[in-house]
Image (cartoon, rainbow, N blue to C red):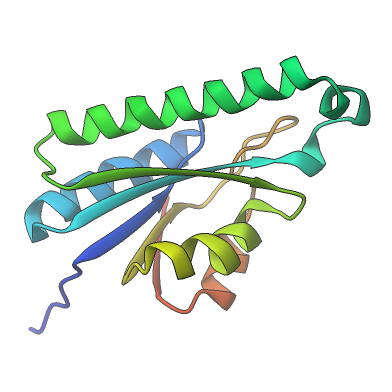
Length: 146
């Protein structure tokens, strides 16, 4: 049986159970394949109301919480034995899946994208139900975790 190995893994995270499963799997895969692990989370500005967007303090707090969460994910991956870990955050008016495909993948240049299959319900959504978009439009292999 031929098994493909990956050198540069990108995992998309938010605070859903499926995203946590995807993250756990990405740690396992990166550790076993001695691959770099990139962890991404997106702040979707289109899910924040106009008053909140105009509140600089509110937006800065949202960005800081997102960055802190990525640092927590990085630490967890390193503590689990992944040697090369990097966190990435981004924000935009597009859906998270589109931002990941159009902006993050070209910058990070992964050979595998790992995502959870379900969305965070309600607002704010950090990853959203974007797995199908990423599967259809990603230029790299995508593994969807349930």
